[in-house]
Image (cartoon, rainbow, N blue to C red; front, side, top):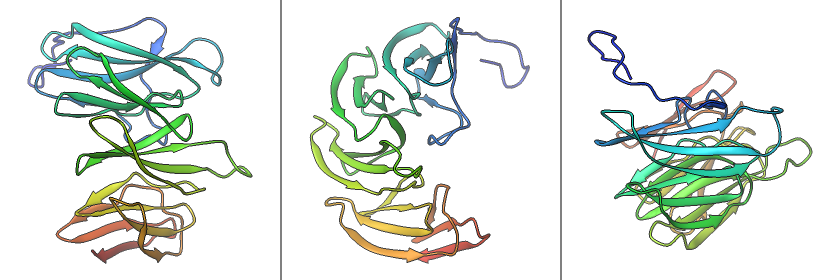
Length: 231
């Protein structure tokens, strides 16, 4: 941690044999979450081969001092994407086939639910539910995504939707959930049921997070188009 005015080091935290993942298909290139008291981030064991099961860690550090408050560990073939916090609970995909909710003060597990696959990417919170994406085994070398919706309080499954292709990070607005796919189709789903509301076909793959401003959703495709749809 550096002072923004002087560049002087305030504190440093390090763990031998671990690295901070980033720059992949997870929801953020910087897998950090910061509140008024703590900074939360993920690391992965750097030993051995690139592939295979390794230890993943989610750390909580004091924002001012860098002192460790707690950490949790999972073991899986994929790293932990950026966590999300709401009302004292931290939510994250463990990279081990489970999605977790832990107390943000203590790290104590509240609940966990089985995911469709080990590789977790996007997660968002909307209307007292959490929506997250995981990937299962590749089918004919194509990504095999699944969206799951569970309750925030107990992790009770509400709905799931098999996509069978790669998808963008999720965004929500009102009663709708939006995402694009790598076959060039953009979708709107009902938040409560997961049922398709509409779809829009583009001329290129859609890889990146859409943006919503003033009742319009914006996204780009690989063919070089920027598209704006009234929602």
